[in-house]
Length: 341
Image 1: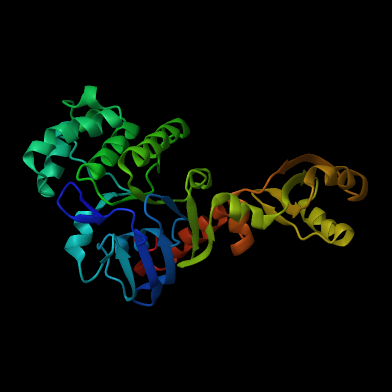
Image 2 (image 1 turned 120 degrees about the vertical axis):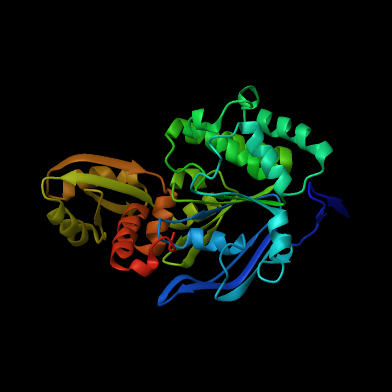
């Protein structure tokens, strides 16, 4: 069965064909391998998160899937179309919200959407109703006549999402959709994203380096240094860790790390100025720490596994430390600038 989207492209309904299918996708810039032979599939109608630190290769991957970057090798299909051989077809089938703002601040919200509709050749009789539908969905209908440069950061992001949906794309790409926004606004943006997925039946592919945001996704892939190191549902990935995270502060953290190994056989690291380790039954283990460690403990916290623990399990570092390393790499290698995100 087929139905027509907003620009006349045929879309299979109920098909088993993946919304996105990638095999061996690679991109190099000179001697830098930004994306290293990745494989992934995204199901129709799901929210798929691409998680990793800045510099992991997420934005380069999304650039290839959106036909903005030509792959060095491998293949990728979006909405059943090859990203190299059918670039125009892919572009008609997707919406894209860039990491950096691309709205025209001197135009009204309504005019930004109208311009987008014209660029995509939407039928004239559909433009006005669709503009109203999109602006109402993101809570901006009452500001439709206002210039965009009078909007807050969160309002602009909501408008960009509405614009990306104007032509009823099969797949909506969101590249770091809430970067730079405060936590309350980020939560609001995610409420709109979940609502639009239910209303529009749109497949959403989004990149983020916020671990808490990945919890909203049906499935995620964790990327580090150009490769996918883990993929699955958030709960499934966290279950792989299987242990609680314990963090302590002491009078001498270096000595505490040594004693944890000597007394309990536990490998610990100093992460974000705290002695950090994983252990089964963290809460029941805490009394043993105070009685047997032989060093003064000033604070202790126990937490269930998080996606940051999953990242540490597969990479040996936290996402924050990985971002710091990526920043140093950016400074050291000019060829990497702007390409390794």
